Length: 178
Image 1: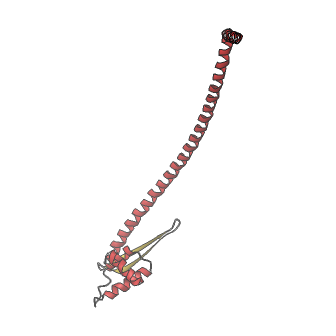
Image 2: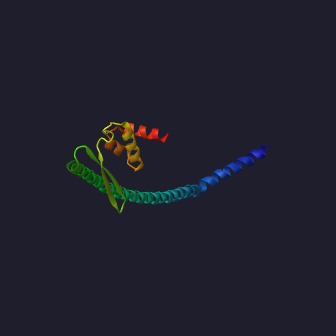
């Protein structure tokens, strides 16, 4: 047993001496192993940064396209707004002309059909209070509302022409469907 302890002490002594003697080389070996993962990490970070930059550039290009599209739509909307203002002015002018030519008891009803290449305006003159006939029969208004609806006039236009409210027009049209 005494020899086993002596052998163990000798081996231990030899290891300590070897470590002290080769200390510089061991330090370099461990530091190289630490620097290799650090350089690999740096390379991975650079690759990731390049990918992120590429993705950001593509997103920026996409946003620029969206901005250009929004600008074009804004210009189109401005043109449509100007067209709508002109239509409103035309309606006012038509109203004035109708009052001059047909008198106060008649109201112009105008339907504007617009397509991108073609602009048509159909105007007709209807009595302002259609249902007020000699007999004052409510059925005449009902027939007129149904006729105007069948011709494609909107509820708003029918209401203007008949002097009735939109709710009355809608109710009468719904009752007719039953």
